[in-house]
Image 1 (cartoon, rainbow, N blue to C red):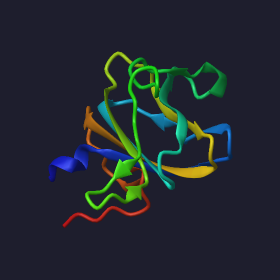
Image 2 (cartoon, rainbow, N blue to C red):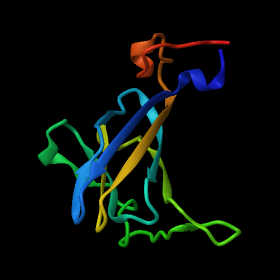
Image 3 (cartoon, rainbow, N blue to C red):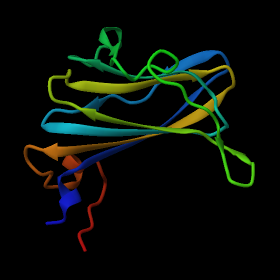
Amino acid sequence: MHSNQQNKYHVNTGSFGAASTATASIVDCKGFDAATISVFASVTHPWSTLAIQQSDTTDSTNFASVSGTVLSTDYATAAYVTASGTTQASGVVFNLSTKGRKRYLRVLHGGATAATSTVVVSLGQAANAPYDATTYGAITVVNA
């Protein structure tokens, strides 16, 4: 068994309009003790709102921000500038322990400029390894 066969992955692309917010798909963390959430933007430094939220249910009104993940409150980010001085699209990676957290996570994102965020979630440290495509959150699983 490869070490990453105990991980489960979710990929979501969500758009938000100018001066608005959106949420990425809800991720069920049951049975996993760690999550890495990578958020990438389609334009340079688009977010005025970015946070990881948690809830015990999938009801959207029950979600609250996870302490330490709120942009401008807990951390700052800037546009990525390459060595040649070119500004590139932004990305933020959150590494979270899911121990002692609520069961469901989601990303809240928004900005002054309309953009698209791509969210990649890797759940790890599984109590039981996923055993088929559905439990991996995939259509097909290839082991080589």
